[in-house]
Image (cartoon, rainbow, N blue to C red; front, side, top):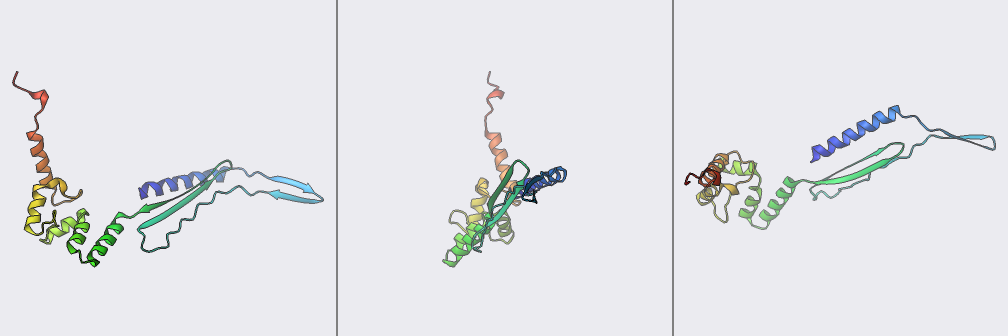
Length: 175
């Protein structure tokens, strides 16, 4: 989402830059008591200031504004960093003495999940740890976090078995 937003902002800025380079300025001259006043200032759109000062917040802020002779648009958005939230939650759980819960929180990330398997200490599975947890993951491959590279083959095998066990009503040979 961050890439899409930044790409859209870049595109709008390029369009704005090209339109202002080709635009003509409107000059308003007024003569009052011997002085000439020239007004060339275009209206402006100011991007909102989004301030995230608290270092304990897992958010990033972005804002942008574009102004043409007719229309001005300004907007801002905050984006939540899910990985930062996961780390803070795990750290809080660990600080409260909930070590298995902290590891389980981190194991929701496929990279951590794979690293734990490679280290010989599989992630906890529904209160089970060690070899019992490994069996639980192997028996329930749909519970494995999406993106896991080590448990993919087992998940794919389970899906193939499910597909084979499903009856297809269009290939009924009983007739």
